[in-house]
Length: 174
Image (cartoon, rainbow, N blue to C red; front, side):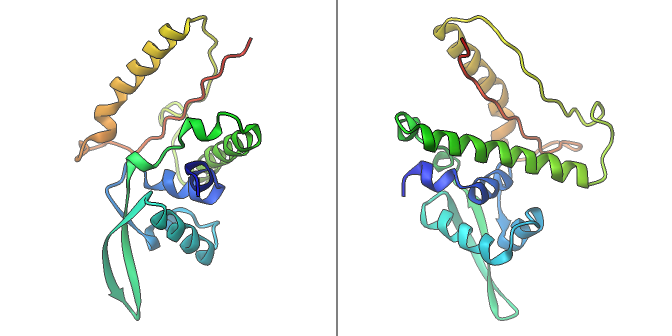
């Protein structure tokens, strides 16, 4: 299975996103975070991600006759190789739609839970068009990554830190 086939399935993409920024979760934790996914479906897709090396089992323990696994996301395996989609417009479109659906599911989860105002919670989505050469745009993307990397890779977050998702789309639109 290619990285695109593995990661661009809507359920598997949501599992990966649920794991991002967390040291480990059990399959039970994942089920609580994805309540709209049937348990059998969730376990099947978690197994596929484990088999594909995207998730790794860090521990197992017996709980009432079954085995509970604690899982960790292998960040280096959690992205699609751009070459896998370079000449497959249908796969790219399907992957992009899965990505958008996962963002919509995150918004639904936010709206379903108690929350403050969008301004207080720093919720935003917007578009901004810029004029840039490829070299300038690469510098911007590297700068964004450099600014965010320390927050994404730190082991311990300070008091009051909240898990946030920053999603980006970059397209030339002539």
